[in-house]
Image (cartoon, rainbow, N blue to C red; front, side, top):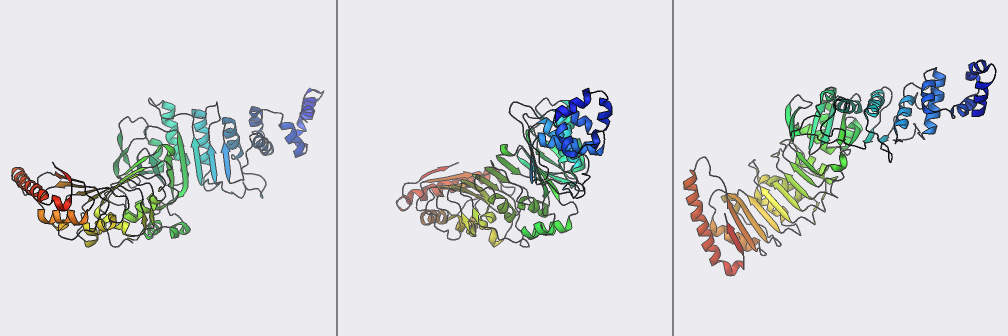
Length: 502
C-alpha cells in the first residue's frame, strides 16, 4: 500500500491527489502510514484530530503498545514518545476506553539492552505523561520506572537537579501527600513542595519539612536508579479502610489529605530501615498497615519512633517474614485504648530481636520464630503489669533455638519473682546494672531457670543523679565480689559456668 502513496506523490497532479488523502478509507490510510517513520507520524499528528488518531494508532501498533490492557510496558524512548502522543487528546470515539477514562493498572518503564533511558529529555516526557494522567483523565495505580543510571550521581547536574524533583511530583498526581521510602527512612512530604527538593545534599542526614509542617532529620537520598509509585496508598477509601486496623480506618475518616501516593526509591536496594520520624499514631498505622508497602530485600528493621504501636509493626513485618533477620523495637508505646491483639507472627528467618519488655508480650499470641537465637530485653518506661519483665520472660521461654539472652537495667523487683525455665539459654548477659541486686536470689534464679547456662556476664552502667559516682562504684564493687564468692560456692549446683564482670 505504501507504493500507492509514493505513486500519488510522484504522479502529475500528485499534490491534488494528496489533498484527497483524508477521504480514503481508514484501513487504507493506516496501511499507507505504516511506511512513514516516527518523526513523520508525530508531525502528521498535528494536522487534525483525524490524523492525530491515525498517527496514534500507527505508533501504538509499531511499538506494540496496548493502552487498554491492565499493564503497559515501555522499553524505549520512541515508545514513550508514542504513548505520550496517544494520551494527548481524548479519543473521538465516545465508546472507546479513553473516552470512558478506563484506568491503567500498571505502567513499567525499563531500559532496553544497549540503550539509555535516563536522559533529561526522557524525564521531561515522563513528567508530561504523568501530569496528564490525573484522576480527571486517567490514574495508574502502580508505576515502576527503572533507569540505566543513577540519576543523582554526584556531582548532580543542573538539569537533573531540576527534572528529578519535578518527576517525583508528577508521579503523585493530585495526591496532597507523598509517603517516601528512601535509603533507610520512611517519611512524608507535601507533594506541592517536592519541586523544591534538593538532590545536591552530600551529608548523610538532612532536615526536611514533613507533610504536617514539622522539620525532622531523615537519611539523605544519595542514589536514584528506580522509582516505584503506588496510588492510592493508605486507607483512603472505605473498602480499604475496612480491611485495616481501627486506628487506620479512623485516620482515613479524619484526614482530608488521604489518599496518599507511595514513592519507593531504589526498592530492591533497601535492606535496612530506621523508623525514627515522629508522625501521629494514626499516620504510622495507616502507612505500615497498607499492603502496598513491600521491600523484597529488607532484612533489618529498627523502630524508634514513639508513635508506632506493636500491632502496626507486626502487620508491616509479617509482609517481610521471608527476609527479616534482625529487629529492634524501642518505641515506648503502650496505650490500652489501642487494640493490642496482633496477627499471627511467622518470622522464620529472624535471628536477633532487641525490644522493650512490653513488646515481648506480642509473642504471647500465635508466633513462629524457629531461627531466633538472641534476644535483648529493655525495661519499659510505663509502670504496668503487662510491661514488666515477667510476661516477657514467659514469652521467650518458648523459643526453641534461643541461645543468648541479654537483660538491660535489671532492678531488685526483676529478681523477686520466679523466672520461667529457659531450657536452651547458654549465655546470659546483664547489661547496665547500676544498682546491687540480691545475690542469693539471683544465683538461685540462674540455677533454677537456666539449666543449660555456660556463660554469665555482668556489665555496670553510669552512676545515677542521686548517688555519687565514687560511692556507687564502691558499692557495685562490693556487690560483684559478693556475687563472685556465692557463685563459687554454687559451682556444684550450677555446673561449669564462665563469668565476667565489667
